[in-house]
Length: 331
Ligand code: ATP
Ligand code: MG
Image 1 (cartoon, rainbow, N blue to C red):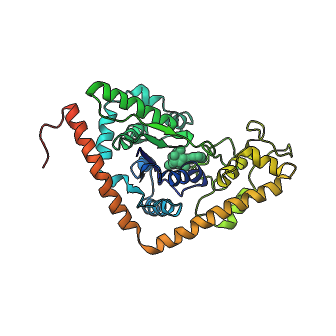
Image 2 (cartoon, rainbow, N blue to C red):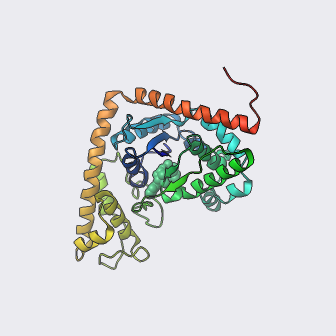
Image 3 (cartoon, rainbow, N blue to C red):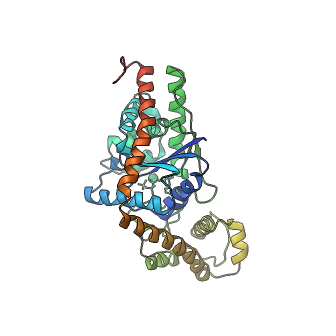
């Protein structure tokens, strides 16, 4: 079985974008791949998080993974910090990354260009840690939304560089982006990605939002003044985004949905989309509540950590020997 690895940062409450672009795809892959999924609690502190909120977000993220359908019997679910090898290989990867490569990473560049101040060194070097996350497990595939593709490309470059310098060590991974829903946009500004850390409550549907609020958010999504349902990403980006959400959740193509709803007004169409989102989220929220009440998270994380550690530590030792920093067999 080929291996697959993915993660989500607990920087806030998970969104519909995370669900459509990442989570629900993990669930589909768990039958066909040896799947490793972790909560990226090191990546999330590249931006300051209030400790108490972070703890809650961490627990919620695990519960939502499970609620979305990840089955700990089929995949390995763990916290990044439970496997110390991530941070160590992250440092080694940083030593094999050029500054020019990090300067080209659009996520950091965008923040810098927006004039954001107080950017941390961790945020700048985070693609090195992300490379380590992936390479530790010899993952063949990394399912990501479009925004993360560039980081997986860098990981490929770093793996190839390392293999050339030190001999075959890492599997070179490929990104896997979903055909539909790889970039869900904000509901009140369809030029921006829906992101959990944007603090844009109106534009963002959180998986744990009250269902009445979800409905209101969809109904008040920004559209346009054409007044006709079309699939025109440039001219009608808000509407296109609603089609994208609807298509992903109903497993139907946007074209088919357009045919079905052609002629309807925006209000009627939004009502259908909101019902579809509410129905999906209500199932997730119900399972979420059961999981939180059942206290199973502790055991699942401990088991996941043990499985992940075995693989990651073996790989890290191999790396240490290859680069010459390890001269004895650890007992
Ligand atoms: P942050 O604002 O902290 O970066 P985020 O919402 O972008 O949060 P990440 O933790 O960076 O979430 O990403 C987790 C996964 O969700 C990644 O695979 C990413 O590509 C995917 N993802 C994030 N936002 C979207 C979106 N709007 N549409 C589709 N996929 C998304
Ligand atoms: Mg992101």
